[in-house]
Each structure stands twice: as C-alpha cells, then as structure tokens.
Image 1 (cartoon, rainbow, N blue to C red):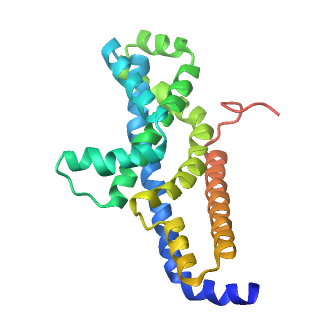
Image 2 (image 1 turned 60 degrees about the vertical axis):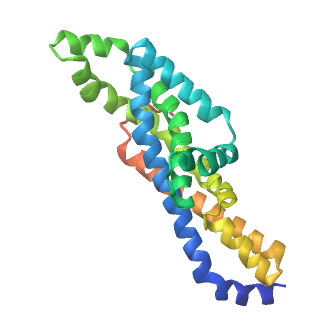
Length: 226
C-alpha cells in the first residue's frame, strides 16, 4: 500500500499544494477580517452607547450561535443572491469565516481590555487626554499584549473550519483530497496524508505565533510568573 501511495502523492502533489495555499489564504484572510471587525466591536461593547452594545451583542449571539455550515449555506444560497451579488465561493467563505471569527475575537479583545485597570483611563483623562486618545495610546497597546495568546488560539480553529468550506465548492485542501480519492480509490491512505498536512500546518502556524508572543512579550506583564 505504501509503495502505491508514494507515487500517487508525488503525481498529485502540485494539485494538493494549490489546496494548501488556498487553505492558508482562507485562514489569513479570515483572521485579518476577524481582527478588523472584532476589535472595534470589543471597544463598542465597553465604551459604546446602549444601542451600540445591544447591536453588537445580537451580532455575537447570531454568529456564535449558528453552526458554520449553516452560515455558509445562508450566505451562499440566501444573503448574497438576494442582494444580487454573484460572488465566488472562495470570497463567500472568507466573508463567513471572517464574520464568525470576529464574533469570537471581539470577546477575546473585550476581556483583554477589561483586564486593564480602569485607573489608567482615569489617570489619562486627568492628564488632559480625551477618551479616544487614552484608549489608543494607553489601553489598547496593553490590551493587545494580553489578548495575543487568546487570539493566537483562533488560528487552529479557523484552520480546521476551512475544511467545512468544501460544502459550497471551495477548492481547499479537503476538497482536493476528496477528488484525489475519487480518482485513485485509495481512501484511508490519502485521508491520513491529508490529516498529516493539517497537523503540520497547525504546528507550523502555532510555532510562528508563539515566536511572535515571545518577541512582543513584556517581562512581568500579561504572563504568569514562573
């Protein structure tokens, strides 16, 4: 079986590599979109008016309360077609993963911001800073350090979530693996190889993020003492 598997993997390697690249693009784009939306939502939940806080709570409740597969179908077959938008499945997958990720990331950033002492805001205001200046210059830099470990843990979650995008035809890693299986009829060996790729991507990504944490870490801040 191994003798037959290696030539097949070599033959299909370029096709599989394209799926790996698309999977990583999905992950990076979804994480970036989640950050761009989730951080302002976290600020809105803490410093926003009551209607703003309520709207964000509904948003978070919606995207955290529905399975990813349901969200993909809702946007692919419902939301975008009803708006007259004929978007590629790949773009829809990024949007859905990003919107869903922003709901989770907003809570990570919210907890990090709340972890910063309110006395720092009071001190900044007493020095003549506006609320926004205090948030931008004092609260957020510290909160981002606190949030980084939790935010990093979103990487493996989003990575595994990309596999569900096969349902709307995104040509990511699992979709291409399934097509290879349908051509070669080597079910378990090919899927085991696919699982190994996911494990390798997970390990490499988390290793890079851990290096980032070590690089920006401030001794004695945001980390338990050893």
